[in-house]
Image (cartoon, rainbow, N blue to C red; front, side):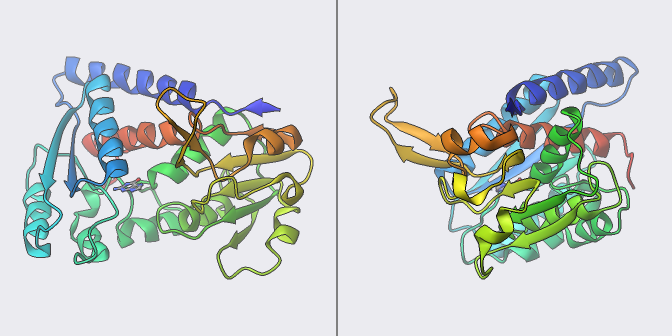
Length: 292
Ligand code: GUN
């Protein structure tokens, strides 16, 4: 079994980006600038956004964090998005999800200028992705592709099973793995909460991508020998074995499933760090105006 080390790979990518930024700036270019909007004080969102800002600083980007209270009106939030759309110093904009229930997430996403949509969530960019046109790929799926590529995992002709159909991970992942690209060219099965006989399907997976958000959902009886496992889940559970009293679990029962796997991502240190690295990569592309 080979561990897909997302922490190391993400660090390699960040170092590559830092070198590109230094040469951009040395050549008289501007520093990439990412703006992030955070609404409310959800613990996980706060952690993710802080990590994104810290990563920007590490590679030499400028960053702006705009915070709103959870009771901000949709109108006020949309006005801020439009203001950033029109700010020529800012190259990329992300609005951390989820948003409070009174705000229409899709309306906010559609208001972001697709040119600055470094999360790749705008319908125009999702459409470009589906058509295999140059675009910003959503960061978590892009991070998974990057791991498959850097570890030289053969995907062509393989059966890829995806568990979970979220707009952020499962749905785009299923499209990307089916595209005529490398990585890609898989036969893809997208499974979800209404899927029947899930175990019969997952047992035929050569590559199993799990993104449903249920700790240790995938067990050893659900996979075949030699499977490649990509675990996107991250759930915080109480533990009396750690100093902090908490531990992070993936969607896959790592100890038992890893024994049957050819490749597997750990949690933490697998897909998570890759997401941030790919967001930085998208922001660099936005700055260099490589897409539009
Ligand atoms: N919430 C969970 N993942 C993401 C992400 O990649 N981007 C944004 N904006 N919100 C998220």
